Length: 258
Image (tube, rainbow, N blue to C red; front, side, top):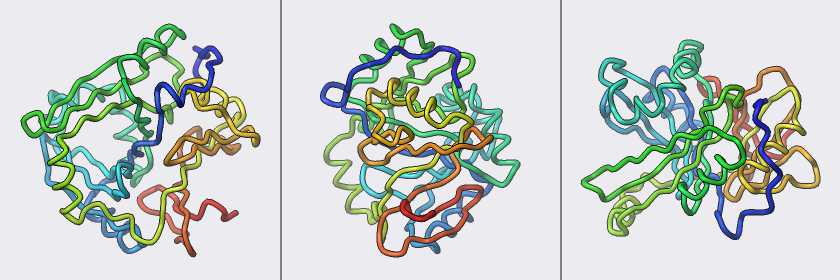
């Protein structure tokens, strides 16, 4: 748990509009993991290598699970993403070497700049990064916590702007396909589930529900359970008879399955 405890904040959903955006799943081989996702009923796709990095995704709508790996460190490290994620690289390496596993997740907000200022006032160290792709048709800003003691599963914050015509192209591509299931959320195993949930609730401005161990982010709730791992362990699905499996170090099951 972080040594910088955020102050208790009110419900910020009306102003910051926090919602689950995507989960990062590190894997040794993107194409192989994409095949496993698809075989499990989660239609996924692979993207080309770009600046030493490759990803794919199970894309439901604006939400997705990003399936990723670094294929050329020398090319990736000096790239915009490589520089921004340099602090994550030891964990990415460890997860990849272990056969894969979930890294962290992103929370979409209305204005990352405003969210960053709130977090800094609460005592957090935050780096802000700007990215632009496809000749400016897609721009996004990410706010990443950098302070010592930040939980390894802690989210980063993102605001995406996309050319409406490009969004329509994406929708027509067939790569936005949730299949038969929806993403209900994810499970974090941590030594102090109630404390971790309270920390995340204050960080995001989404109050913990009455269970004391669930932060009901729109689009994908964060569930907490007791255990030593202190990491995301499980993708939780909604739908009729969801699969119960493991894909490259990420467990997959129904949200109501014990």
